[in-house]
Length: 283
Image (cartoon, rainbow, N blue to C red; front, side, top):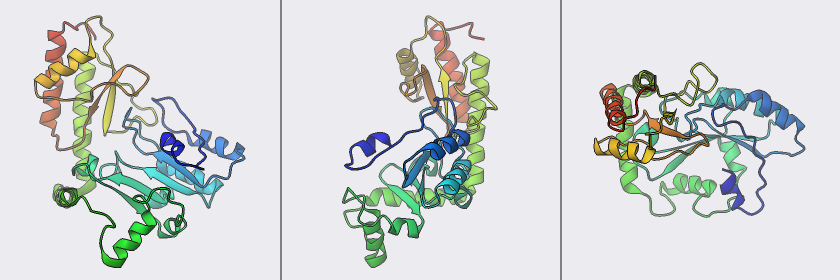
């Protein structure tokens, strides 16, 4: 978010950072906003951090934002959570919730969507610094003739419609979330038995997410992630290639059309690969 804003002229940004294995603290946020001399027009937060798996308390964050800066727009990046993690938009006071056709809705990548409060969106008129991302103009276009202003990604829209049908047939958010939680449970139990530690400590704030998990590299001289990744890929299982946190970790996703059987197979194959690499005695 900071990098995107740095490309836009006249957009000033302040960043409140936390450790990569910590959730956003509403207490720290309150102190930060109270002490700041800046009249913030928007506060943005990521709901589920794809890099670590941390789930941020958006309802608590939103309440702090709206209490201290009532006119401020509260923006929630729900790219990795929408469709599987409950979001109480009213409780959070969210003005904009942004997500994507893929991830938990299980469509294909190709477009994003924004759920917006119309009064807040109308206040953005004339502020867009990018023609194609002018949401006010796009809304007016849809309301005027029902069309996109530019050529729409029809194939991803059709795939999204099918994904929403399947979402409903599966039972909606609760049922899908329970399937993801089961995947999370199987993987974590299996990794614990193998002696591989999760980045997030169970029971701590922010560690209750079930979208993606980060695990520490095994502390063993024979462990090499590139070999580990390629061997798993050779068995038909692909995990996230490489780390994006400062801590040496690899990540495993629990979302998509994955079942408990798939998650169990992953654990079994990880055990096979570690044995082949002679990475043992981790427990």
